[in-house]
Picture 1: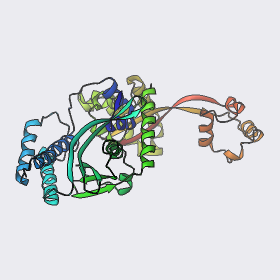
Picture 2: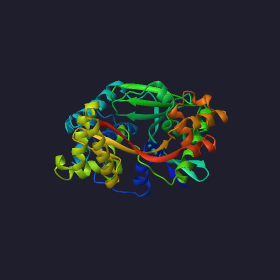
Picture 3: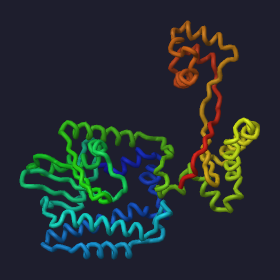
Picture 4: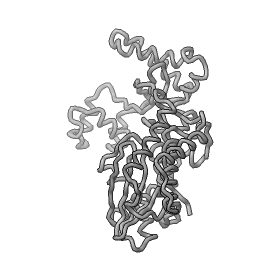
Length: 383
């Protein structure tokens, strides 16, 4: 059975190139973790200890749990752990963890809201077709009415809206496993503890919703197994990616940082391009030269992003449709084929898209040609 997990599927949807490095090539990186996931892991361990000891009738004090957390931190912390938000220190994150544990303790003591029947539950749900889904439930509880509670601890600093939780796939997939392994189950409640906000949120799923989710998950797995191209997806999450130093999108950043940053040709080009970008018409000629130089630099290096001191420049190649100088023939042909109204006033962006996708008559396509062009755009440099 080929096994998948929520994080594995999520990585594919986030960035196929990261998926390839992590799950196909199995690349090991020097950065073992980010401080956010490190913090989350230790908070989970502390709360796991709380409930494990309760099963043996041992009630930890709040101080004992926080001390346990601090000891784990000292034992496991390494300087290779990535801190993206440089304005916050290691101690800031440690203090956050202590507060999460303390607030949870005060809120739920004496911890008898439900009976705990599973902690860090590990298993695989058989999806059929030779696929398995990894189950890892932080805490599974139940009450006397046959309600089961799939509990998940969240340490991130963003409180999700109820609508997001009602669409959440991870805990919903876990509820399929609960219903299969606990025949006395009347209902499954999905519970999130947002520790940064000392807030508990709950969602539920119908059997029809769960069946639809199962089918969607199988379809995504089949898409992954059929995938041959693993492109990079640049998003706001790139700063927290431990594979960034191996990513083509960030290649120039690491090349430039390996030498005197300001001496790098790409850095100089982006800085100058950004400066003249604001001058507009007065610098059109200079902008044209810089544009061609940036395109040449990106092509030479085989990169899509060129990094400057404060900004980065995206250099994206695309297919540009080239129209004949005399457009009367094109307009008459569009009318003859009965599609002129669709592009009334000759909306070139829409027509470009149709031509490139070959969704218009062949004669219209043959009247145009295609050439490679580049689109340059500036943005904040990022992490």
